[in-house]
Image (cartoon, rainbow, N blue to C red):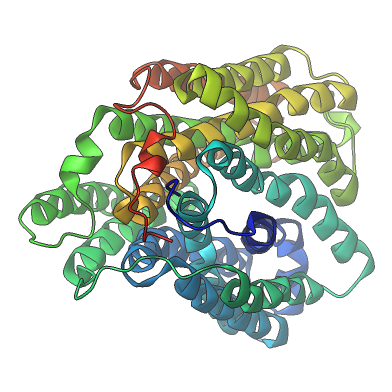
Length: 475
């Protein structure tokens, strides 16, 4: 917001954005502990039930940049309202459905809410005073921690003691956020007569679906199987084709020249590596602590107890987000991004060599929570400061996609490592397999640290300066 722009009540705006982000973050992970129960209740095989995750991931990845672009063109608050309304409709469909096909359809509709975060970052840039932008973006970024750290134990409690449909009814917290979005988020500047590059959006969607579907199903199909190779290679080829296509469009979905900027390119590379390293923790940690004590390493925790192990990580994330924003404005977000990656590397290194007690996971989880929060807040702020106000939504959407794709690769690699070494006569992984997976994540974090150092020490105008450059009418 420029100095000439009117002052807004930023407290209610931030509250709406946090509620909207929480609805997406919770629904992303709460279904994980419930998959076996849903498989039984819906009389579906595990392969079909796994699509409750895959459908959500695919839709979120495809929708995120498109919704970010729609917000840039037609008003972020208005688009936020329709996104949250659509998400709520998907939640109702999931809760009422009595077949696996309908629940999968509902989950695909819910995934549209992936666009909440790029819209939120743009709204914060448009409406907050310059000195508060970084901290608010850090807080909104930290809301991702609710998904893993609070969503998983809450899901465990519901699965153990309640009706599994409540997992989906909770998605209706997005309804009050939708209503309030129309009331408290001021109208943002729109671009008259501008259009979404739908052919470019379709090509990007095809590339992402092909790539992510190949990676997420690789463990079942085999990494060298024809479907996996065709989908992954085809997705990569379509991505390259999309880049060439966008370079020739008068109104591209994404300005490729913008993605080539050092600050944007290095941040997106870091996003991929951060996703690769960090998202595997949602798989590795609960599975490790739930393993029977007879394995020689597990603690035989229940689903609820395993989720509680992640709570300290979530609490640290929520506390560290605003701190990362404040430190970033003083030190530069390049430094705080490197700090975040370094903290994650420390966490995974600790887990690789010290994992004999649940307390070890609590300590490592605190480091990981701080690392995730610092990294996510820094990446969002770096992108926001490096691009013009009119493309904040789509630019931050692309960064979100890089994290998602990185997370898909990291999770698939972790699953492959765990399944490659199992205890004799049992499907359970060996302790050495977990150690190797933690080392892999530590290495990914160190590579993310190196990528963070590739970003410019400061943007051309300095962190946050791009916010001040927004036109006075951009509200």
